[in-house]
Length: 148
Image (cartoon, rainbow, N blue to C red; front, side, top):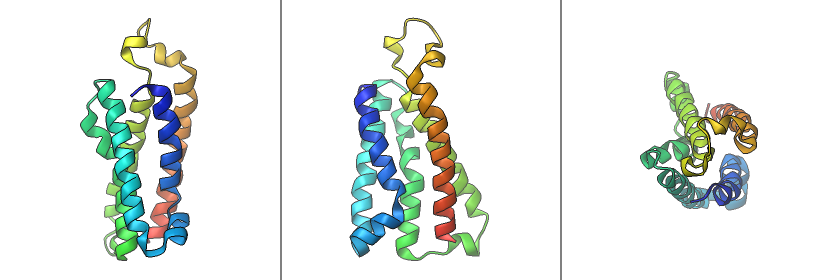
Protein backbone atom coordinates (compact mmCIF):
# COMPACT_ATOMS: atom_id res chain seq x y z
CA UNK A 1 0.00 0.00 0.00
CA UNK A 2 1.31 3.42 -0.88
CA UNK A 3 2.06 5.85 1.90
CA UNK A 4 -0.51 8.56 1.15
CA UNK A 5 -3.60 6.29 1.08
CA UNK A 6 -2.24 4.46 4.11
CA UNK A 7 -1.99 7.67 6.13
CA UNK A 8 -5.40 8.87 4.94
CA UNK A 9 -7.01 5.61 6.09
CA UNK A 10 -4.95 4.78 9.18
CA UNK A 11 -5.07 8.13 10.97
CA UNK A 12 -8.89 8.35 11.22
CA UNK A 13 -9.11 4.65 12.02
CA UNK A 14 -6.69 4.84 14.95
CA UNK A 15 -8.30 8.05 16.20
CA UNK A 16 -11.65 6.23 16.15
CA UNK A 17 -10.13 3.32 18.05
CA UNK A 18 -8.70 5.72 20.61
CA UNK A 19 -12.15 7.03 21.49
CA UNK A 20 -13.13 4.00 23.54
CA UNK A 21 -15.67 5.63 25.83
CA UNK A 22 -17.38 7.33 22.87
CA UNK A 23 -17.65 4.01 21.05
CA UNK A 24 -19.09 2.42 24.19
CA UNK A 25 -21.72 5.12 24.54
CA UNK A 26 -22.75 4.82 20.88
CA UNK A 27 -22.73 1.03 20.47
CA UNK A 28 -23.44 -0.09 24.03
CA UNK A 29 -22.89 -3.79 24.56
CA UNK A 30 -22.04 -4.33 20.88
CA UNK A 31 -18.86 -2.27 21.21
CA UNK A 32 -16.71 -5.41 21.41
CA UNK A 33 -17.97 -6.58 18.02
CA UNK A 34 -17.58 -3.15 16.41
CA UNK A 35 -14.15 -2.58 17.93
CA UNK A 36 -13.04 -6.05 16.81
CA UNK A 37 -13.97 -5.23 13.24
CA UNK A 38 -12.13 -1.89 13.45
CA UNK A 39 -9.10 -3.61 14.97
CA UNK A 40 -9.01 -6.19 12.17
CA UNK A 41 -9.20 -3.44 9.54
CA UNK A 42 -6.41 -1.52 11.31
CA UNK A 43 -4.26 -4.64 11.45
CA UNK A 44 -4.84 -5.24 7.74
CA UNK A 45 -3.86 -1.68 6.84
CA UNK A 46 -0.64 -1.79 8.83
CA UNK A 47 0.16 -5.28 7.57
CA UNK A 48 -0.28 -4.21 3.92
CA UNK A 49 1.89 -1.13 4.45
CA UNK A 50 4.69 -3.07 6.14
CA UNK A 51 4.48 -5.82 3.52
CA UNK A 52 4.81 -3.24 0.76
CA UNK A 53 7.92 -1.86 2.42
CA UNK A 54 9.38 -5.37 3.03
CA UNK A 55 9.58 -4.42 6.70
CA UNK A 56 8.41 -7.40 8.78
CA UNK A 57 4.61 -7.30 8.34
CA UNK A 58 4.21 -9.64 11.31
CA UNK A 59 4.90 -6.66 13.56
CA UNK A 60 1.54 -5.19 12.54
CA UNK A 61 0.03 -6.96 15.53
CA UNK A 62 1.84 -4.47 17.78
CA UNK A 63 -0.35 -1.68 16.38
CA UNK A 64 -3.56 -3.35 17.50
CA UNK A 65 -2.48 -5.03 20.72
CA UNK A 66 -3.09 -2.12 23.15
CA UNK A 67 -6.52 -1.41 21.68
CA UNK A 68 -7.54 -5.06 21.83
CA UNK A 69 -6.40 -5.31 25.45
CA UNK A 70 -8.42 -2.25 26.39
CA UNK A 71 -11.67 -3.28 24.72
CA UNK A 72 -11.54 -6.87 25.95
CA UNK A 73 -10.57 -5.96 29.50
CA UNK A 74 -13.06 -3.10 29.73
CA UNK A 75 -15.97 -5.17 28.40
CA UNK A 76 -15.22 -8.18 30.57
CA UNK A 77 -14.73 -6.03 33.67
CA UNK A 78 -11.30 -7.48 34.44
CA UNK A 79 -9.46 -5.47 37.08
CA UNK A 80 -6.03 -6.88 36.39
CA UNK A 81 -4.25 -3.52 36.80
CA UNK A 82 -5.70 -3.10 40.29
CA UNK A 83 -5.01 -6.64 41.38
CA UNK A 84 -1.61 -7.00 39.68
CA UNK A 85 -0.03 -3.57 39.03
CA UNK A 86 3.00 -5.13 37.32
CA UNK A 87 0.85 -5.81 34.27
CA UNK A 88 0.69 -2.06 33.72
CA UNK A 89 4.36 -2.16 32.72
CA UNK A 90 3.57 -4.69 30.01
CA UNK A 91 0.67 -2.52 28.86
CA UNK A 92 3.01 0.48 28.65
CA UNK A 93 5.42 -1.62 26.58
CA UNK A 94 2.58 -2.52 24.23
CA UNK A 95 1.99 1.20 23.65
CA UNK A 96 5.70 1.62 23.00
CA UNK A 97 5.45 -1.16 20.42
CA UNK A 98 2.47 0.60 18.86
CA UNK A 99 4.44 3.85 18.57
CA UNK A 100 7.51 2.15 17.08
CA UNK A 101 5.50 0.20 14.53
CA UNK A 102 3.37 3.20 13.57
CA UNK A 103 6.47 5.34 13.05
CA UNK A 104 8.12 2.56 11.06
CA UNK A 105 5.05 2.28 8.82
CA UNK A 106 4.88 5.98 7.92
CA UNK A 107 8.47 6.23 6.71
CA UNK A 108 8.89 6.70 2.95
CA UNK A 109 9.29 3.70 0.71
CA UNK A 110 12.86 2.61 0.17
CA UNK A 111 12.44 2.44 -3.61
CA UNK A 112 11.33 6.07 -3.80
CA UNK A 113 14.31 7.45 -1.92
CA UNK A 114 17.06 9.12 -3.89
CA UNK A 115 19.55 9.37 -1.05
CA UNK A 116 20.09 7.37 2.10
CA UNK A 117 18.51 8.85 5.24
CA UNK A 118 16.21 11.07 3.19
CA UNK A 119 13.48 10.31 5.74
CA UNK A 120 15.18 12.85 7.99
CA UNK A 121 14.15 15.55 5.55
CA UNK A 122 10.73 14.11 4.80
CA UNK A 123 8.12 16.61 6.07
CA UNK A 124 5.44 13.95 6.57
CA UNK A 125 7.69 11.86 8.81
CA UNK A 126 8.87 14.91 10.69
CA UNK A 127 5.28 15.96 11.39
CA UNK A 128 3.77 12.57 12.19
CA UNK A 129 6.54 11.16 14.38
CA UNK A 130 5.98 13.52 17.35
CA UNK A 131 2.22 13.27 16.84
CA UNK A 132 2.37 9.46 17.04
CA UNK A 133 4.48 9.64 20.20
CA UNK A 134 2.06 12.10 21.85
CA UNK A 135 -0.91 10.02 20.68
CA UNK A 136 0.59 6.90 22.25
CA UNK A 137 1.26 8.64 25.56
CA UNK A 138 -2.21 10.17 25.62
CA UNK A 139 -3.95 6.89 24.82
CA UNK A 140 -1.93 5.00 27.39
CA UNK A 141 -2.82 7.48 30.11
CA UNK A 142 -6.52 7.60 29.24
CA UNK A 143 -6.91 3.84 28.76
CA UNK A 144 -4.85 2.99 31.83
CA UNK A 145 -6.98 5.25 34.03
CA UNK A 146 -10.13 3.74 32.53
CA UNK A 147 -8.91 0.24 33.36
CA UNK A 148 -7.97 0.96 36.98
